[in-house]
Amino acid sequence: MCVVLSVKINPTLADAAETLEQAFRRRRLVLLVGSCRVDYEGRAASTLEWGERITMIKQDGSVLVHRPTGYEPVNWQPPKCMMRVKLEDGSLVVNAARQEPREAVSIEFKEISLATTGELTDNGEFALHVTEEQMKQAVLIAPGLVEAGLKPLQQEKSLGEAGFTDIVAEDNNGNLVIVELKRVQASKDAVMQLQRYLDTLRERIDRPIRGLVVAPELRKNAQPLLASLKLEFVRLAPEKCFKVLKSQKDAKLSQFLS
Image 1 (cartoon, rainbow, N blue to C red):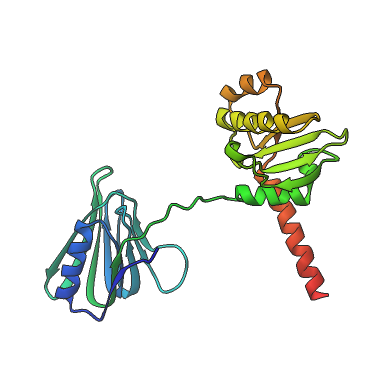
Image 2 (cartoon, helix red, strand yellow):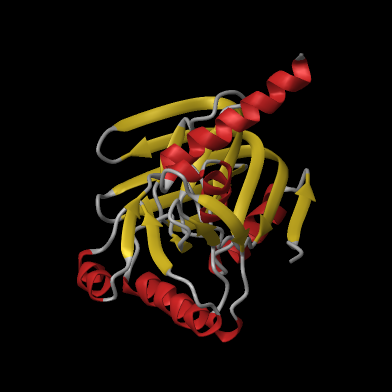
């Protein structure tokens, strides 16, 4: 997907004001670089005198004013701010206000060197330690995370309409083991998905098969179903997978350096 941004270099304040009004009406991202002064009034009061800064107004109405250095904003407002822009006494003023709690930030610009507006789309999942795919890779590297003696045989095995298994393995007793991995709490859907894999494989293979749901937690409403289907649950924290992946990365780096 191509992101379309409107970029204006050294716009006049009148031109910048028109651009901002349109962006605020359409709830678009706004990025301003210029000399500004900031006043806050609400649960406390503050004034930030003139300086060259970066102001970001996000699509959800949150506002951040950044100095040229440091990662934290020097002034900020949370989402759902009501935005207004006006020209007065040779300055452009952006007001961001909230009703509950009642507070407002006023950002006054005497010059703007960059004004950018646009709309971004971001539906990506945030994983603090590892993604589900990375958890799978960690288990393939260190199967003991799931069970001692487990031997992975295949990943992403296609079972037709039933879908794709995460991992097919073999245990110490020669049983086939189907592993269904979840990075978050495993639900009844995960249990039913695993059962569909087992039903499909039992029609094709004449050997004992076990089914394991591997996740940080198992939802309470999934426990009775898991027991009734005689499936197993293995608790695996993403942090453990992270350590396995990190140790492998460190080992590769050590080999490279040596």
